Image (tube, rainbow, N blue to C red; front, side, top):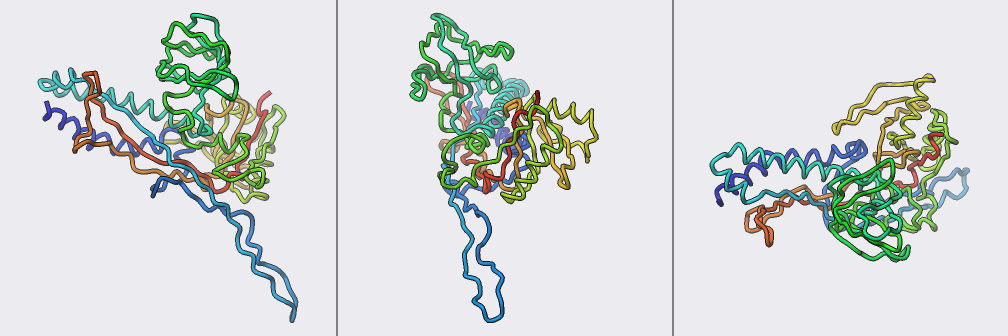
Length: 391
């Protein structure tokens, strides 16, 4: 038995781990592919963000006093590193039967790894656009005995997810159920069906991924949200940290995008090179391209499979891409050079040299791939939000 597990461990470490650790930092989103990655040095993600210009310059005259020094102003950003895991499991039965048929064992292992990676890829791609809370949707009070919840948004829900359910007075939700699985998502009716037949909530509530409430990456949703702080710094006292919002009046145009890109550069020192559009916004822009002359440089293919447009907006080349995790009628512009994902390498947790452990009260072995880190931006106020992109 131990020889077979050792063989499986060798396959995971030599064949799968290098590929998975590379792809998981690229594939989930075009945004993730374009930003910088740096090794995490401790349990904090820190950045000294320059604000405005150095104040020591001034004109003068012969014999007059020279300008006074005024050093560059900085704000200290700080985040906690969050835990990220990819869980992989293989049954004892597969291991036993694999001793006589190695190819079938490898096939079973391959299917498990691909399924685990697909879940990790989707959740990481989703979390990049969240605010760190991990809230997927809010639901309405229910009738007794239902297994279906009416939610305000289904874009962050997927069949197979394990959810935690919180309910209560708004602002004081308490955990009601954990590890409930999504059976079906009806995107037209905005409902989610769960594998629990006796749901009853007098109060509204919210859904999160299992164990993830307030434990996710501090994604773009934190920058574009309305919280009073970002990275531990007050946005009330530092208005320059608040992104500029432009309403496009129900019609997305190159001129509307240009105004946002121009002002981000002019007032916040940001060079917007990526605009991510919600579903309706992207459809509206494609219609606009068909009806008008757009300076298309080329199509841009991303590793994860997405295809965007590289266009000239004013005198600047910008990549436009559809991103379903963004509100459907919005577009978010970012300077990817200002973002850094600081994290540790993805590695298997080991116990006395073995990456497999037998799960309690089961006949299933578990291997856990882990990384620790967070996303941070040196110039959050340089981001741009475009609203009302489609009629």
